[in-house]
Length: 554
Image: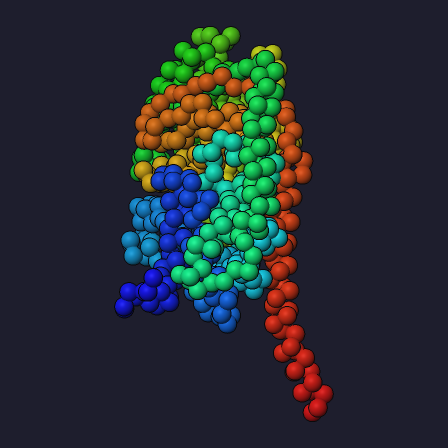
């Protein structure tokens, strides 16, 4: 059929090309909470792939790859992290414009990891004559880029591609093999496979040519993806039975005080004390073995600030004396002061109260940049102006909390706020003996944005990676309890005062991820950086040779 006059597919595809990176970045962002269009994680990259395919077939242009990668990254990260503007504008001295500028700056930095990823992909011609081997290489490079941004500088393993797949129960089960990075690998591979299958339908539109049938080339990739689903079916049944075999249970209660961040200043400590006293008494009627509060539920230095500490302790001792036999272990959040060489050090701490004494405590190990400490603050004092807190905290040493129950002692893996985003922190402590994962957080900083939903989603991953029950107590929500299979047993609302409870089990399982799977992202990171160095050397070597030859002639 002759083309309609005035319609030029080449011109039309050229115009659309400029939008494809933004379309892909936007679709990928929508796969995460609170939009939760999770299926988009499996196909959102395809438009961008076609753009990269079109420029691969033509003369290589670093400028085109750089601009398109930055557009993709900026559209993805700006939507994913829009809540940073809310937090900075509301809780720091920065005006809205400055807060927005800092978000753009952060997103630009994060997008550089995508730039390197897609530059390598184009240099390897991964989108030209797509096949099984190239699909594996792309997925490895994707995971390598995610691992790099989770490690370099302060590290930010938030908004990983694999997080979007937690809403698919069968796929989620595979997290006990390679962790969240395994899910990212699967999602990247899925995008590549669908791209390969769709090639013939878009060849004319994008003026692409393929030498062999795409279905034939996609079969090995499809088999690999289906094997993940097959493992998911097996693992779901296997771990259900393993958890069922553990007969001993314990009841936990989570207190959600819903103290607005504006009221968590020191002058409002009395309010926090009264709210959590009331919630604690409410929890006692549920006969729990352990009661948990959120991070810094009591926003004072315990036990050094004597007036407020005395009020809390007198309440706990009175309740304990009334009924010692049913008094639960109480894990609560507060600040702690320590002294090193005569200088005071502040910590974000979880304490364990057994009815008579503080039996154990944990100081937060991984602090939030500009939220709890100021990177390079001693060298650049102006950075203090963009911090949302005035007190600079010090990191503690990673450890588990020992909880003495009536008939046994169990170890709990504590994670405070930002720490739950780091899969390796949870894994390391579970391997050291952790039988139950506990996340204490204060997400009041984020209001009703998508951040609390994104944060809670990570709880599923930590539970499945380690096959442990995982619980989260959040000041304003979302609090909840997740089974070792990633099923949410109970959860709270956002900005509500609640006491939630459920029966859990202290487990001792060893997963493949704990033993070996944690090495997978490290290997991917080596591929990512190793490939970069090879290409940089390749680019530099001819210039070095020319320089040396000129020097020899002189």
